[in-house]
Image (cartoon, rainbow, N blue to C red; front, side, top):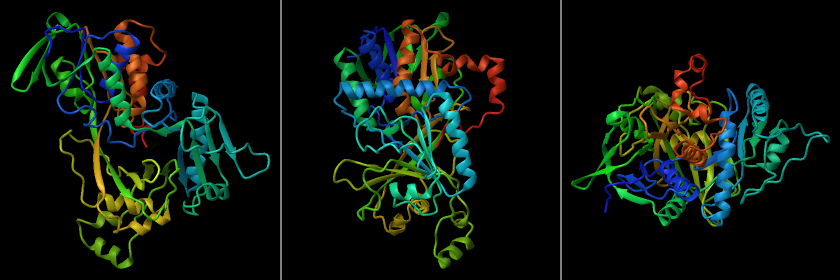
Length: 461
């Protein structure tokens, strides 16, 4: 039964909307909340990433580092409350390179991240006076695993990760990073929110009455019926559809979408140890082919691209508990803006390209080239602002708010994002990074000037 009045309507039951409902209900005591989702909770994009988190973010400024540190604090708090229901770990991210220039970039970026608040940088040259290399923990989130380790001695890399190519000359290993089960996190939050009175409605928001310059009523289509719900607060948490929902408010949301894929394959040969961190190859890759294969591919206009250099960034992590053999592989080598449409689809060569690309970093994976069985491929949309920072806070219609543009970092940002949104709605104290997330940042001349030189890929793997 859909009520005729409610305190808050949240549009979207992805990780952002569910987290918002949880924070408002569990932390602020606002329980008369309607959470509206046309499909199934968490199924549109929330579980389509690596489900990883990190406090390792570039500038300008320290807003994103502080924001992510807050979000990780909250994730760890929730893991404690739930007996780690969603399997949070702190295995870290391991960036690897065979290029001296990239190794120098590691140093510069790590020094910047240390200054921004991501934690102490430890440099390892293989000398007796080097700081100790922190022990690796496959499970849990040991508080001492902070900052980052920059390894400039290839022997240390081979000792720690013997399955990695011997060409790797440097490794940057940020430590307050890891992953979790997005589905289990979301369902735990949803169960907790519903236990406090939050109602989940299967339906679609089709209209919003904003007469008088404020939110008055939301129209929800559920099945063949339309329901008119009076409310004074509306939250746009519609993921890759935030711009469409923004249009119902008469507000332009400056975002675009990119389609990113994920491949799951089995590793029956045990090439990758199950306790490995998330691992990223930072160099461009030319796919390995037999000479005859390469010549044949190069002769055809439709396949020639498979013989050309691919961009850096192919990465993977193990997935599953004891006895599992799954690896999750990701590589968005063809980034472009695209409308959000479902079902998603990927080129038939995608899995083969990613497996061959990863064999540059982990040579043993070459055993699966053309021989990895039937891979599971899915993906979702990164909904992004031009500078790849989120939109969280009030919209220019009284009573309307947004938590969106969470790009590929929605899981890791969800808790600080919901915490910030709830502070806006309840009139609580705002953190120092709030202005960096607000829509009205684009109205500031200084920010617009900063945008002119902003790297559009900032903060994205």
